[in-house]
Image (cartoon, rainbow, N blue to C red; front, side, top):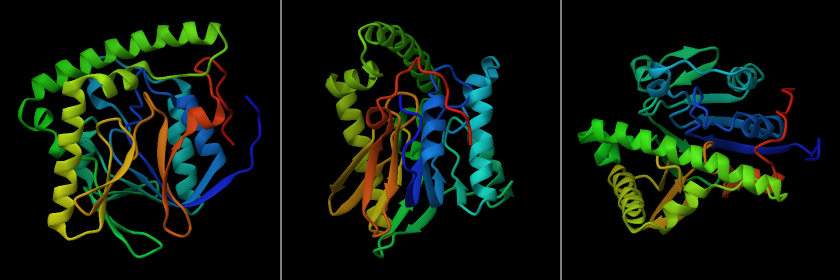
Length: 263
């Protein structure tokens, strides 16, 4: 991996589903992203810290601490940072409308783009029927997901031995399993319908680990993806245009390259 690229500057960056505190978190990839990307506004759209996993056992390597420090440093240097807790970091929902270290916590926000569009920004777990009405099933699904990520880890060891960069097996499977595709489509439509009821132009969310920008019934739906499988971020350019960055692919990052030093 090259050690330097010209820094990019965006008006706004949206990140979610980082899952700090888990072995699946691609903290080194995110540190590389945060090192090379600056923005005026940064939205952390839920599941930044995985409290579910930390309750079952403590896992917090230095790279995860570096991510927190890097985010706080951006807030100190003038970036407006808003943290919208999700279901995995739901204890922080008790502290919405407060600030910690320059980071504002909120249940949801309305973001005004440079071209005048109003976007509802929320994590989105309230539109997931499994999380809302059958949490035990969500926990079971979380366990199955961890197993898939372990398989993904060993799969990428094989890819690395042949000189290929990181690639998400679990994300690929989700695209091809009929029930998963229907679940994702139902979720996206439910979130977009809520945005329509609120009278906004679009919605930005996370939760399902699938980055996407599309129009649903006249509403702009944007999901910023995750930093467990796809290593994606949603960015707003200075003219209001939205784009999904697939960071690991753009940078040809490998799962087994050394962590990037925090600047």
